[in-house]
Length: 340
Ligand SMILES: Nc1ncnc2c1ncn2[C@@H]1O[C@H](COP(=O)(O)OP(=O)(O)O)[C@@H](O)[C@H]1O
Ligand SMILES: [Mg+2]
Image (cartoon, rainbow, N blue to C red; front, side, top):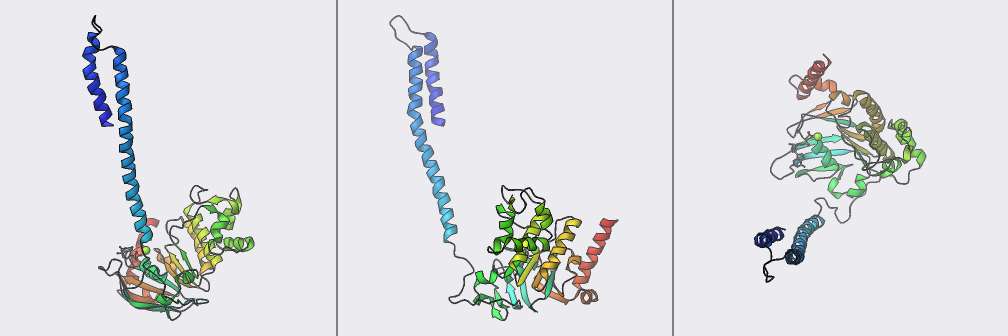
């Protein structure tokens, strides 16, 4: 680009005085026609050269992008199944942590010596200040990471012996921000159970308090949502995710801040849906607002990666200087401040 401009300026600077002077009687000097032709020829000369430059630049960019893509394709997954993995049919839902220590980066320990045993069907509330390791515990249960030391048992079987895909299909997860993929509401709910009948989908949607708003959409269950589709509110997406989980009928359920960032009325509807979802499953629920965990059979209190207290809401409140008691007080004060 620069070459062409520099050339044009050069040509003009050379030509301008001669053009003004005009041709003399012998026809020497520069005529306007000669000048125009020359200018066009220089353009035609430089354009291919520039194209070559552009192609080189594009090739460079493409090679470095391709390298990055191959890097990702070549990455071995951190979690791989053993040669002859165990398939629990079905998972009953006992979850045991034995002295689990975990670090994401190999330097800082995020969980330290965590041990607990959760019976099938028990609902556990994970509480603790932000950054204490609650989400990390749920990530380990889903086997997104392996513990640095210690063991995790599912129904008494080491999680590392399990067929990960098979195990995850018996788990349900509802997170703070539920993702819908591009497709109809029906497809989104049926995601984990593709052979479910329309009747079963509607039943799940009813239980998730989603049927009402889905029916009011222009195309009902055939409305396209997700990227470039009809936009649903956070609370609506949440209830679709809950319907999906209900239909999938998981044995182990993880709810991580599932009712955060929605208004009170929506929260009530989601809470109702969750109360139906948790029936008869092993549940690990993380909630910022402690009152949402009132149904939990047992609360595990984490602080700086350690399991510092466990017990029912009442038992924990009775502990003088308890971490839970303190958290509870802080929240009550905050609540009163907002109410005032
Ligand atoms: N993917 C990650 N890589 C590295 N560190 C992480 C990662 N996820 C969380 N952490 C760190 O681990 C600690 C515990 O995080 P987390 O389990 O998300 O806490 P909580 O859910 O209780 O707020 C935090 O200090 C956080 O910064
Ligand atoms: Mg978290």
